[in-house]
Length: 239
Ligand SMILES: NC(=O)c1ccc[n+]([C@@H]2O[C@H](COP(=O)([O-])OP(=O)(O)OC[C@H]3O[C@@H](n4cnc5c(N)ncnc54)[C@H](O)[C@@H]3O)[C@@H](O)[C@H]2O)c1
Image (cartoon, rainbow, N blue to C red):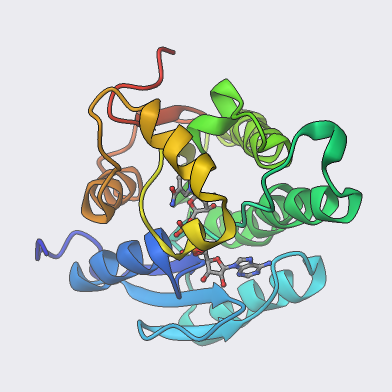
């Protein structure tokens, strides 16, 4: 893991920081000097964990207020909490599962952005990095709820980036293809095989590859880019 002081003195919220991509990014940000607050439904072994469900708008807002009370600043949001929901065709998709995917991935993302922007504006500095997915650009069959939720995240971050463009806060998305994490346990093996078959490099992404991009997007160097969608798909995405 690369060590530097890129994030010295900064406070970073990492949603979903107990597992997978969020956990890897939290570790990298901490190694480079950030104080980490993980917002997750489960305990993380990195930084402080504030147990919360991002579908609860009130509790998410309270968690941001607590950071301001305790640390007096909030510099970075890496929004990685997410679920895939089951794999099924749109006409067979269970209505309750569809709703919960949208609630976590899209409404939850909105709640997190809504909670962190006012503190960031106070310091006239902030970096928001939202985990979208190539599914939100291309649509994966048998993952309609997930694809729709991630397309929604892309739209939300494009709007937010423009709203904040004249401030010191930047908001961007990363749209990865598949990376092996505990998220895979939610998907059918045939769906995982489908995702791999779509990647021209013929392999899954690695956690450190995703984390390196997220950390750059979360850094002061990402200064002239906002409302954008970065690619990490091994050649899959064509736009
Ligand atoms: N792994 C991939 O292949 C892949 C590809 C593209 C995009 N993504 C996106 O990256 C993000 C991270 O995925 P991952 O692979 O690390 O998944 P993961 O399952 O390993 O981690 C997700 C974390 O989010 C937390 N979480 C889920 N719902 C929550 C809620 N309502 N409130 C609070 N925390 C909640 C979980 O407890 C978990 O710790 C997700 O948004 C996912 O859609 C993942």
